[in-house]
Image 1: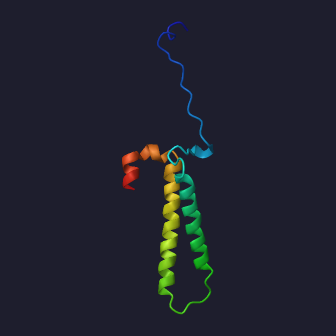
Image 2: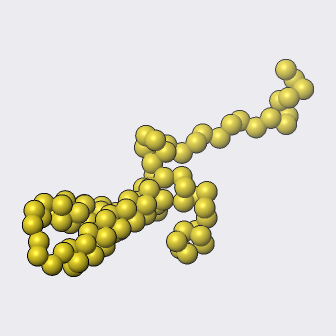
Image 3: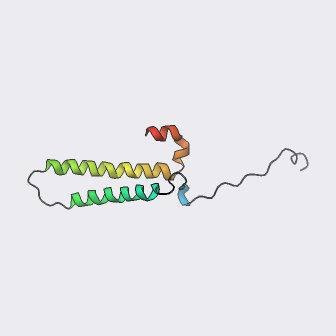
Length: 98
């Protein structure tokens, strides 16, 4: 018992986080609502495109489908990176490049 007392430090408490490792410290202020709105808006675009029953010239519709689905997936990716521990794992430089 007495051998370890001078060298052992108390264990530091970990910062409190939301469930599933979610943290909001990288998206503060207006950035979080904008990213959430962007994700919801792109999902609505995907759903609206899927509601089209009939078209005569479908190539613009296919382009819109590709663009809205890509925007939705990329928005989800950005939210995941910024709101989880992956941001610290990758580092700020790699996240900015992404």
